Image (cartoon, rainbow, N blue to C red):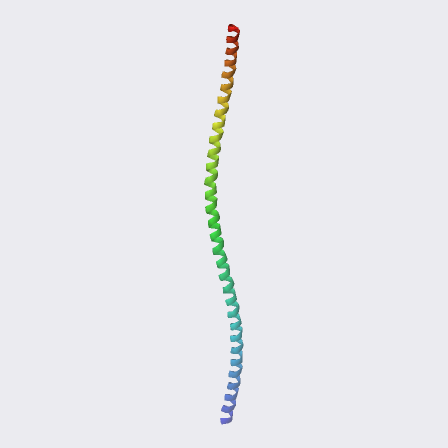
Length: 115
């Protein structure tokens, strides 16, 4: 009976050794997975930082676009004002030309009467 118990204990010891080897293998694989996950975490941190920078750049571009839009609206208003002023000047010049022509005509009539 003692031999049988001893034999069973040796078998149990052998099985325990095998289980320990398997657990060590699993631990090594888990360590490898942990290292890979650490690498993924580092890459994600870098991506997150890049996304934040891109977000800041987009916000700056958006703000600049708003400012430029206001400037464009002001330029369009100024152009419309200048265009109106030019039309007014053209009309005035046209009127001056007509009045000048009439004045020359009057001058010619006066010269005829005088001379």
